[in-house]
Length: 99
Image 1 (tube, rainbow, N blue to C red):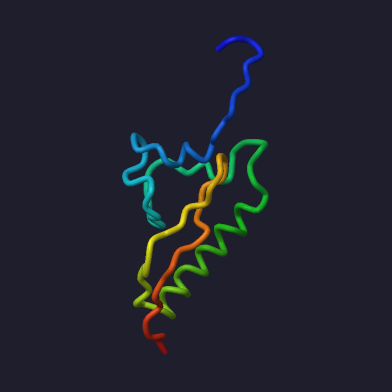
Image 2: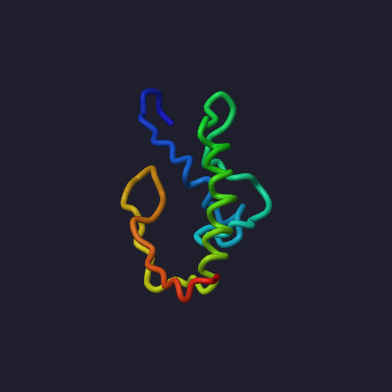
């Protein structure tokens, strides 16, 4: 790489490497193996990571308990962008609410 050449670093792509993660495009909350780089690392570790993980650990099970029939009802719509990955829409059908 020549000196002075600009480089774009895409750390979000690291969590989508098919050589490291089986089915990298599938949301797997129980995925084992290499830890994701979603919250950075070292001195650049996200201060919001622990509360975000706790929120997910509480919210997802509560949502699935309340709506055990939750299923995808249409195609996911990917966010358009170079750096951030994610969805702008994910249609679901909730089914009957449990008591």
